[in-house]
Length: 170
Image (cartoon, rainbow, N blue to C red; front, top):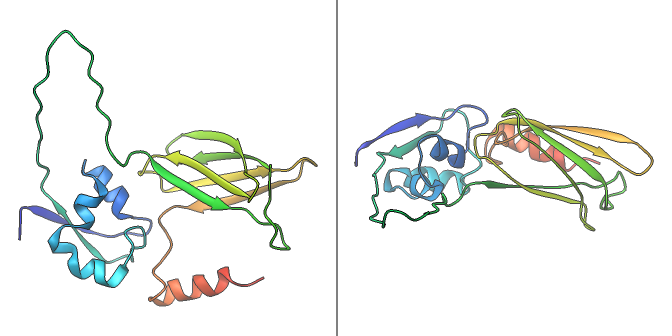
């Protein structure tokens, strides 16, 4: 085993959020050899079960040599994350061109409009855990969707199986 620590998963944790907090790329954590059994059980890094154990490798500091007197830009790969949610009406038709407001527990807000297929798509930081999406159509009708980001249980566990069954109900 390499140097690092084990993170005990709590409700709402994702590999991306765990890695972000540890200043890693999510792939570094997910693909660590010590997480091989977890990858076999969960198949997707954003669907973890409370009680799962995620190995977080020790951070390796990388240094670069650059000339002084110039501006250098560094961007952290994989940040921000992408939020995608498809909004449908009761008949299963896409809610196209509906104004939306996304508010997260981190204090971040963004507005936009659903695309022709009803999709809300926007970047967000991986440490967001809760939020709400407010939809307002042309008639002024408002719908609020409370979001528990990272709280989708794996379909192979009892809570995940029940949630998947509820999601398919009309």
